[in-house]
Amino acid sequence: MRVRFWGVRGSTPTPQKENMGYGGNTSCIEVRTESNEILIFDGGTGIRLLGKQLEQEFDGRPIRAHIFFSHFHLDHIQGVPFFRPLYDARNHFTFYFAGRSDANLVMDALAGMMANPYFPVDMSRLPCSRDYVDLAEGTFRVADTKILVLPLNHPQGCFGYRIMQNNKVITYCTDVEHGVEWSDANVKELAKNADFFIVDSQYTPEELPDHAGWGHSSWKQAIETGISVGAKQIALYHHDPYHEDPVVEGILQNARKCHPNVIAAREGLEVTI
Ligand SMILES: [Zn+2]
Ligand SMILES: [Zn+2]
Image (tube, rainbow, N blue to C red):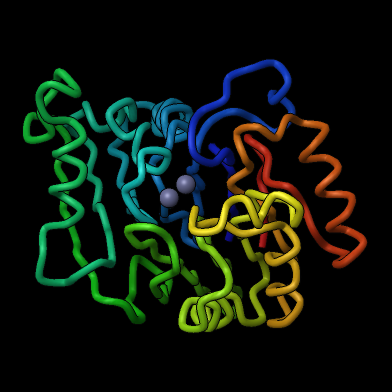
């Protein structure tokens, strides 16, 4: 599998020159499976550039992709209305969320964001064809992968994903605050022996006490969890909007003292698992 980071910033886009090394777009990653199925996790502002790249790659051929949401805070959905492949009738998308299997959560949340007066195009008028899938927590099959989805401790809730294919595991665990037993256990289950553990590392340990209840982790908690479950490579993710490049660089150096195989997620970075 391959992972590409399209947005790595938490909370809000930060298009300022001090952040251009790691990037200012909000949460969005793309996973390509062995058979080149496209799985997208979160639709932060990074998804706009992914849309442009897909248009170039497919060059008029139909695009099909599966789009999963961790939750519906703005930094995870804000780019969806600007994902240009939605405006092409040849394309098909399936949107997933795991809150409740008997509700229209994913459709309602996306349609609500694009409703009058927030956006000029009503979601129901998008030309592409699409499905909305509301999942319960647990394991399910998508394309040629198996995916485990479990809830995480975050204000208004969030879900983490474990993507499994041919004995390889990618874990996407953003927007989670450590320190609550059931959630800590879920993070560990999602990340157990993961080949690539993408994890919320918004704060430094020093910043954490002032942000209790905000729903995020420190890089140290992220690394300790990764070590405890035998994660092979860890990607620090969801960088704080006030952490300019030198701060992220400093966090990365400290993290590497604790685990030999850590990276800080950066826009455009591609990792083969
Ligand atoms: Zn977020
Ligand atoms: Zn959030």
